[in-house]
Each structure stands twice: as structure tokens, then as C-alpha cells.
Image 1 (cartoon, rainbow, N blue to C red):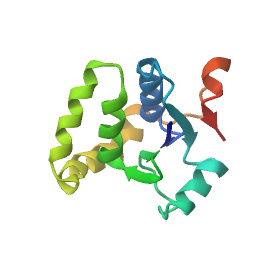
Image 2: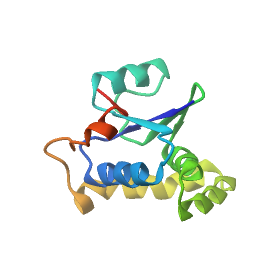
Image 3: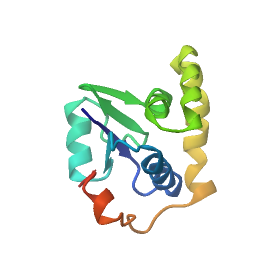
Image 4: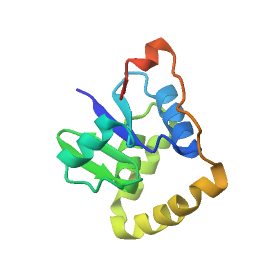
Length: 130
């Protein structure tokens, strides 16, 4: 069993977050695809998520999760101290997502955009879809 994370491949913060997850996902539970890729776009369509979505998306057990719900579910699976963040799931998502939306609005300004995608090692590359 595994899950797929769709991320904004142009966002420096998002790419760094994927690296953070990879380092703490000892089991290789998560796989990855850029939202901008053909594969990512086909999954957005399959799960009826708008094609212009630039939010974190987690596909797990045939369900799609976005924004803070996706982030918290990812934290829950990591081999790290960030597991405790899952406790915030008790806060209603509209409230959690207010903070997410503000951060998302300024992430390019604060962290910049990638001109090209990161190049993972061959071992990690097999966990990426394009």
C-alpha cells in the first residue's frame, strides 16, 4: 500500500517539502508527481479536482485530500517528531485552511520558483511519476 503526493513542481518551498518527506519516509510509502505533469493533471481530473489547483494533494486509499488535511495526513505517516502535528486535524478544515491559503498566496514571493525540476537520485526517482 502506498500514497501519492501531488505537489507544485515550480514552487521552491514545495520541492523542499518533498525532500523533507523523502528523508523521513523510511518505508517508501509516498510516491510523488508534479501537479503540472500530464500524470498529475490526469489524476486531478479523475478525482474531480480543478486543473488549476496549486495546492498540495494527497491521494490515499482512493480518496483525495487537499491543503492542510493532506499535509496533516502526510505528517502522521512520517518517521519524525512532526507526527504530533496530526493532532491539529481536530480543528475544522476551513479554519486550518485559512492559514494555509495565506501561506500559499505568498510562497513564490517568499521562497521563489524553480526554473527546472529537482533531479532525485536513481533510488528515489522510481517513486516519481511524470
